[in-house]
Structure formats: C-alpha cells, structure tokens
Image (cartoon, rainbow, N blue to C red; front, side, top):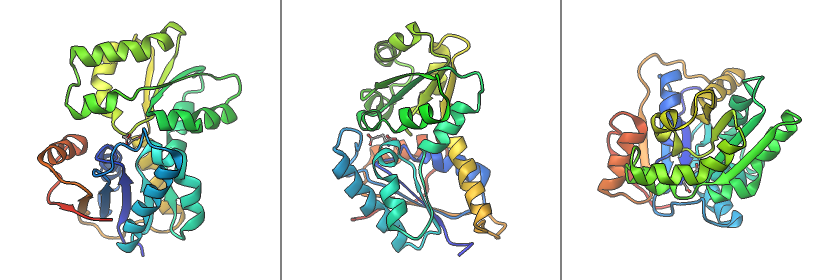
Length: 265
Ligand code: DGL
C-alpha cells in the first residue's frame, strides 16, 4: 500500500495548486488527479449536488487504488468531507482544516477576512472551525464568485480584477482585517497581485502548503509514505478536455502537466 498513489480531486484544475505543494514536499509520491471540468463550477451548486459529485469523484480515485484521498477543493470539502470520511475505508483529507491551522499559526491573528465561493461561505465551515478554536476572533466572510472566471481568463493583474478585488475586499479592509484567508484553490494565483493590493501587515493565507504538510504527517502516522526514491509520477484526468484546460493546468501546476486523459465518471 505504501507505494500506491495519492488521489486528489477538485471541481476543475484549481486543486493543482495543492498537487504542486505536495510534489514539492513529497517528490517520490505517485499522484492521480481528477478534475471534474465537465461540471465545474461546484461553488454555485446545491450542497446535495456537490456531495453527489464528491462521492463520484472519490469512487473514481478508489478504483485507481489510491492510498489516500485529498479533497483539493474548498467547496467539496465544506459540503462533503464528513460523509466521505464516514463512507470509505481510506483516509480522506480536506483543505479546510489545514487552512484553519494556517490562519491560527499566527497567535496574533484577531480579525480574519475569508474569500471563497458562495457554497463555501454559505456552509460556514471556515467560520465555525475558526470560531471554535479561537474565541474572540472577528471574522468577515465574503463570497467572491467573480474571481474564479477572472483567474481562468488569466486576468490576474488586470484593471477588471482590481476593480472586483476592491468591491470584495474594501469592506473587510475598512474593518481592519489582519489576515486574509484564500479559501478557494484557484486563488493562490492571485497572491502576487494581492501582495501589491493589500496594505502592509495583512497576512495572506492559503491552504495548499499546510495541506501538503497534513498529507505528510498523516502518511507518516499511518506508515504510508512511499519508500521509493525516484521522482513520483502524475496522472492527470479531466472530465472535459480543451486547449484552455491544458493551458490552465500548466499555470496551476507551475510545470508541464504531461499527458492529460479525458475520462467519463
Ligand atoms: N475548486 C473550487 C473551490 O476551491 C473553486 C471552483 C468551483 O467553484 O468549482 O472552492
């Protein structure tokens, strides 16, 4: 089982930011990735539909005999993680717990802004997890549905994106947030723009790196770390394939994605 692959899924290609972080930390691990590009976005769908899709995505990965499932999508984590963990034997990890850990890693964090899809914000998963672990924390959570299409359009440092960021972030900046949680796997691509956009002293947090650390600690705990020494493989599966998705995959992964296979769930 140690040398079985890790399985990742996301509604699309955003979860490749998590894959990238895991490849850097655990380069020997083989990875199977499923991006449900035929049905993206999940962020605007109902909790029932998101759960159904998340179970289908997980079963696809289990058929490939993965040793662990990583839900590399905030929306799917918010709505489906407990039911996935209950249903399947393999360990299932989401991105919210590591995101919350990353926010609370700074003992001084007191006012936290959260941006995410509508589905993630409406689930209150981040708000509850944060409030449970630090009393007195002030949380400003805003759905930011326009950011995913702008990022996919590669409009990162673009006047339209800056205008949208003003609309979403100015109200929380007016309230003096000290931390901004990027609670969507697409948003790390905006980090360079956000660094320039946000006032100094506002910490930007995303869950990709902390999720990779959680994957390593869980694998270590379960004695499931790969014992091979070479570079692990990456198998990329998408439920819809177009030139645009190949280009996006390259940008999210920060290297060539290799051959991408179209699959039907
Ligand atoms: N991957 C989703 C997330 O992290 C964003 C895209 C979508 O709405 O499906 O929430």
